Length: 311
Image (cartoon, rainbow, N blue to C red):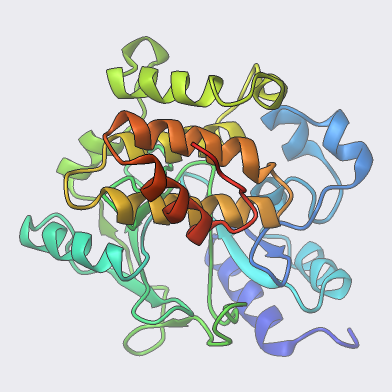
């Protein structure tokens, strides 16, 4: 137990006792890198769930087993704490990333679709996470799922939880109000359920098709590794980013593009993707919605300096 942070372990065990599957992230807020063998041998949800390694496969390693959680922190004492969202924990988390997300949140509040519920304050200034009860139907996790800067973390996703410390700001996540998280969660609003619930592949939208073309056109060699993507893969996360850019409204397009570039930078830091081809996919989408090439290049490079974007 030497070196295991008592507050983090106590929080992990508390979440597990509450029924929330927990796992340990790297100190940079991304999943711990898979063992070399796991990366190639376990490529389906079933094989990732069955993997015995402590932290391979990200949220698939989440557990409510106290002994396993203790072993995770003994292996990675500097790691951050995360909860698997979706049906596994009975949660849908609305993640508001300021400053763009604050404006979107105001619109959602006016529409009265985000009733009061359990809330955590993230390590970013004014960042919040709203925890709602999972409705029992599959809810798609997607960046910008409720508008620019407001992500949806549900099935096949995870959120960082208190008392983790944000790697960029050095500030700790904390639960709002009296610091409790174990109150009954407010049901997800029916309007959001209809908007976010997963639909069969045959019902894919025109925007999704355009996102596919933007992605596939960026780099055939890069995208070839994702020929049979499963939900939650880097391919689908990039696909969601491209789709969000394509849906950006007039007056918000640059802000949305910058936000998406920042997400690519996070994925590149986690070594999930090569930033150049992914940025090219964003650039193609941005061109499609009418942004100028110079503007696109500057915006993407601002959010993801390693992209080296050309348009």
